[in-house]
Length: 108
Image 1 (spheres, rainbow, N blue to C red):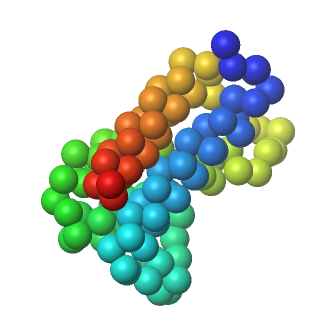
Image 2 (tube, rainbow, N blue to C red):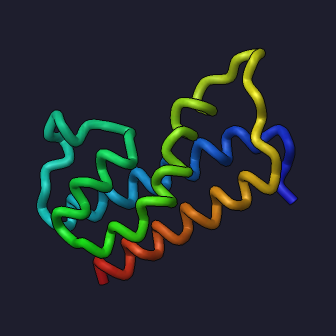
């Protein structure tokens, strides 16, 4: 069980896990992630660049699409914010783990 008051933070960190994994892969491929066009939190934009290096990334498109909004959606709390439920966060954790494991496999 996930502590209810941490559900939004957990969702945010799932997006961050995917973002950092893809940026790590790009660094591994010696692509400068400090380049202005890569200084983004948008997983779908990062995915496009990753696909140019390895077509296998295409299978991560659905995961990136689901994880992507959680960066801005849950980063800053506001009183009108709808909290994700535990089942949603568990799905996000699984997607983030899948993407992370996929990237690690490509780098070892």
